[in-house]
Figure 1 (cartoon, rainbow, N blue to C red):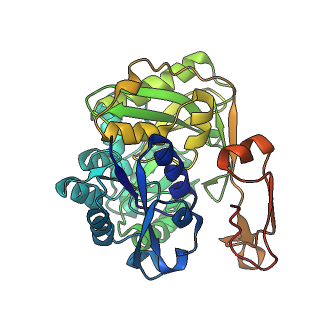
Figure 2 (cartoon, rainbow, N blue to C red):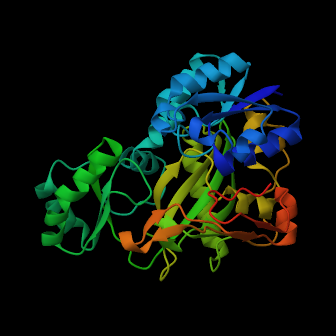
Length: 386
């Protein structure tokens, strides 16, 4: 087992990783920008390293600074959490080349699934169900031509990025032609990649995803699927596991498809295979793969009685014995709800809100180490119950 792990992240996910490391007897190294000097993840870490000024580009998104912090503190591994550098291929490669274990999939595995059109190609090669669609398109004329073959409505999608950015439902050819340039520009601005492709649109769609974990040598387990269909602005609001209302045949099919895709690249560590499911027919098709720990991983842990972060750490240290006797049979039901603030003056855009009172159910508060009710002094941002 490692003696020390650096957490290349901040906030809730950093605190969550610290709890597991503490339970495993592994020292944690936190990193922070100047803006986060007084944050909870710094208080809970065994030691911390300043990265730089507040902007993420000068701190959490600087691979060289993260690696230098790991070397300076003697950390043997880096857990990226989610967001920031968690799916950054050059960073994962640099970790391995530096002799520091990246607690996630390999750079080559991330490369296969980094772009949605190459992920579709991988799914096609191993027989995972795919919606009618295209590869990368040259221009709007080709898009209109291909859409006629697929049949409207279609989804015009960016091959890079996520979070629903660069995605537009197109009901007909005039709308598709009009949407082409705006979606292309959005993709270029957000992801530095203007590649677009088409997929058939499923109007009565559910978003169902399968948590996977692989040992890097071809053994992959699929855990209970999560339903993430309740969304706002293409952002998940409720995540529920097991997904309600699915037949056992559909559940088995989803998990089998996810395992087959992961085994095709000898997937290592935690990941999520996402599907779109037709609520009317029960048919399902591959969407994409997230090569990292998901925000909603906690609901999966609740029904399986296990710890995905522990699995990631132990696997990174060369121990995959926890998979030997694991049986993916969920017990009970778990739901996660995300609460966030919006600014009505700015068309309800997400914003940082003022939290004045937090009240957790006593059992959950006990798990987090929080009191059942925590109050924040008026005017303070953020609220950090301790």
